Every structure is written in structure tokens, then in C-alpha cells.
Amino acid sequence: MKIARIKVYQLDMPLTEPYYLSGGRLKFEQLDSTFVEIQTDDGLTGWGEGCPWGHTYLPAHGSGIRAGLEILAPALIGQDPRSLDHINRLMDVTLPGHPYVKSPLDMACWDITGQGGNMPLWQMMGGAQATPVCVNSSISTGTPDEMIALIRKASQKGYRTHSAKIGGSDTAADIARIEAISETLPTHETVTFDVNRAWTPGTAIQVLNSVDARDWVEQPCETLDQCAHVARRVQNPIMLDECMHTFGDHLEAWKINACEGVKVKPNRVGGLTRARQIRDFGISVGWQMHIEDLGGSGLADTAAIHLAASTPEANRLASWLCHYHLSIDPVPNMGARNEGGFATPPSIPGLGVKPDMNVLGEAIAVYGV
Ligand code: MG
Image 1 (cartoon, helix red, strand yellow):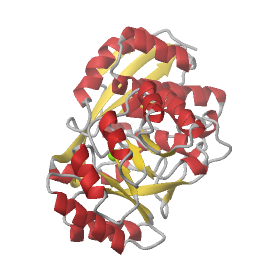
Image 2 (cartoon, rainbow, N blue to C red; image 1 turned 90 degrees about the vertical axis):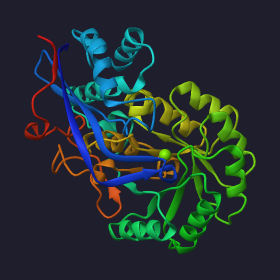
Image 3 (cartoon, protein in one colour; image 1 turned 90 degrees about the horizontal axis):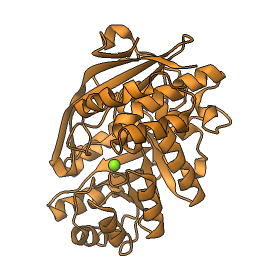
Image 4 (cartoon, rainbow, N blue to C red; image 1 turned 30 degrees about the vertical axis):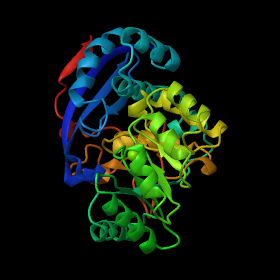
């Protein structure tokens, strides 16, 4: 089996309402998503999606994916898409770094490998069944009352785990947010306070040692070293996200005891192949993980849910579904959806999701014959 053709599509996906991170420092209104369709010489078609959460969240942006695909896609023509590790090594030789560019290609190769082998992705990744995965809400930064109202709204949709976005220059406001949310949350619901790297180490230590809450705290500061410094001086378990790009970053975080868990996001680390390696390392060192993507439609969400569903329950906390924040749905009625706080991956071979071409439109680039 050989890759004969790679088609690229672009879609602007507006959010249903503006979304704020880091105490309002980062505002998001629309996501720029890139869809990749890989066609093989024996008639199989695989799909991938790359969607950074805007261009201010990480060193990644939508047009960067398309520019990178101009270099990577021609190199993959003629390769066997089922040779996943070889495909990843070839991409690394052709374009070192730029992991987020590689993710949609790698995802489409997984889709084809699953279809060719007649297995759903959750099984290829080691799972025994299509386990329903706990999903978490994502709560935009606001006043304590605004954030509690959003959490209540999410609870009504079945969410029992919440990711509350905090962090900013106003230390007192963050203390008020943490205390109000912790006090209000029903005992059967949990929250992670996601700082999105907004605090200096001094602010993090001051805030976290001022509150009674012992909930998870995510990415308190910009760098891995800063987060490790904080982890040694607070009682909250620490989750790392934005500072983790390579397998080496995860190894280093474990060596210096920087965290008790990580977010595993295929688009951040370079695709499902790399995400699975990191997931397996996380299992071996006893981390608890959130397995989800940076952003995207139900297609990217479903790929991450396959990986989450194949992960032991003891090692996963919850998964966020980005597509509920979008006003359009390029994969209507397909893939992993929130059903009472849980999402289940499809059990048909491969990824189990294909875009509606009426929503996606015409390809903006075609590589191969
Ligand atoms: Mg985060």
C-alpha cells in the first residue's frame, strides 16, 4: 500500500462565544483548522486534523501547518502509511521540529492503518474495548460568580470534571476565584485550576499557599523549571501542559519531580504516534493524564478519545471536547460526543470519522497524482 495523493483543506471555525484564558490576557474568537485527506493506491482514504488553539496559545498557527505541509506532503508520496514509526522518522528528517505540522498527517496514517487492519484506533492503541471516557468542561476566566454560573451550566450537561481558567496579575482575584469555586463545587465534582502559565513562581507559591483548596493546578508558570520550583513548595498536585513538546520534556519533568500528571495533546507533541509514546511513559511512572487535543472539530476530538479510551482508568482524569465550543460542525453526527459526561470512541475500523465535504469545501492544495 502506498500514499498516492494528499489533499489539504482549510476551515475557519468560529467559537460560539469569546473565550478568555490567563485572566483575560488571551482572548479567542475563531479557530483556524487544517484537514488532511490521504488517499492510497488501493483506494483507502484517511483523515487528519491540525488545529492549534489560535496563534497566541502555543508556538503554532494554522498557516504554519499549511506551509509545513508543502514540505512534508511531497516526501510522503509513495510511502506505506501503515509504517507509522518510519513515517514519523521521515517527517523528522524532512522537517526537524514543527511537531504540530506533522500531527494531521500522522493521524490520517493511523486512520488508514486501522481501516486496512480492520481495527478501530482504540484497539490499535492497546485498548480492550470502546471504554466511555469521562469528559471535562472548560470554564473561561471571569469573576467568581461568572465562573460558578458556567460550571453549573456544564454540570447540567453531565460534566463532573471542570477545567477552570485562572491566572493573572491580580493575586487577590485568583485567590477569590479558587476559594469560591472550591467552596461551591458539589462533592462528586472535581476541578483543575488551569493557570495557562500566567504566574511567576513567586505569585504561584503565594496564591497556592493562601488557599485551602488541594485541587489539581495546571501549568502555573511559563517554563518547566519554574513549574518544578513551584511543585516543591505547594501541596497541590501539578499538571503540566504548554511547556511539554517532546518526549525529552516529559522525561525531564519526571526526573526533576515537576508534576504528578500531564496533558497529552497529539497536535502539541506531533501526532498520535508521539502522544501514544508519551501516554505509555506516563503510565509507567504513575502519572494521571488528560488526553485531548489542542483544539479542533469532532474529528481531532475523536482521535484523542481513541487514545484516552485505550488508557487505564487509573492513569486518566478526563478529556476535553473542543467541538462544543464551535458554531459549525464539519463531522455532523459522527465520532465521540458528550453523553451525560462521557464520550465513547467509534468501533468501526480506523478513526471512524469523515468530514462532510459540503462543510469542508474544495481542497486548497493537492500533492501527488
Ligand atoms: Mg491547559
